[in-house]
Length: 70
Image (cartoon, rainbow, N blue to C red; front, top):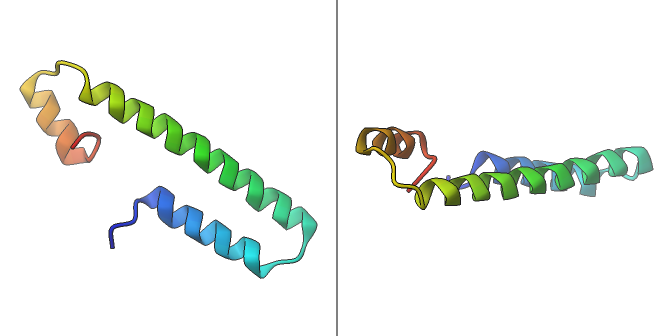
């Protein structure tokens, strides 16, 4: 499975959105999807900043193992 946790959450929320007709639930799910988009953008900005920073090799290795940089 190559999905990130954010992609998995997005898929689940979108699936729930399709399954319900309740306007209050639709509002909450759409809002959750919008917040998820913000998290994706912040994550991407953080990853970009880390990849363009001159890091100590040991720190870079740790960040790579944790999946923060490629």
